Length: 224
Image (tube, rainbow, N blue to C red; front, side):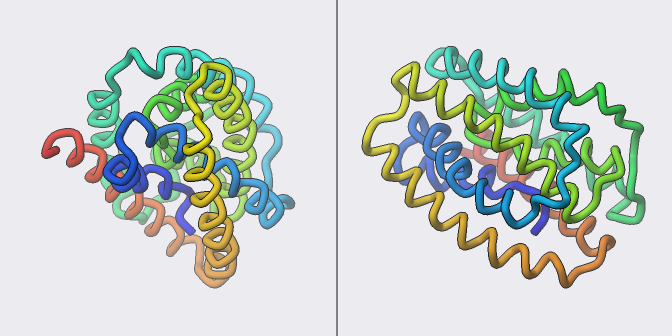
């Protein structure tokens, strides 16, 4: 409904259930399994002109992050990202403006590398991309559609690299499959709800999700 963030909110819960080291590959696997259904639902709204900038560098970032997965501490990254997400409520004046800065399409080249790298390490950074998509003029269905297409191609690299470096065990594949099936149901229900809300309501929901996600990221790394 609000342009991603489900994977981010799953991080603390999944970490508690199966352990922090297993959470990133399971979350990325589960969300990847659900993406074909979302692609089908939003196919006609995809802005392919952004994908050609985002995907190539993002694939490189995902492979490098998988290589470093067991060697890098990601908590400080989540704190910085959380602060950025919370700041969006002020950038967009609580949803009253549709853009807060100019975002050229070429900017998605470095953005793809950075976000794919970090999300492969920590398990999800979906809301981080929302301000950048919004500042290219994307709203509602076209934002979710384009973001889903980018995430699908990055997901191929993430799952392939996890498997190549021996991160995904048989048990983690089962967890990821279960998560993916639930996410497919959520995609169908969310699509129907999205059709009934306005652009302004969508923007407010988007900002709310980013702020909540930011608080979750900071809280789980400072308080726990």
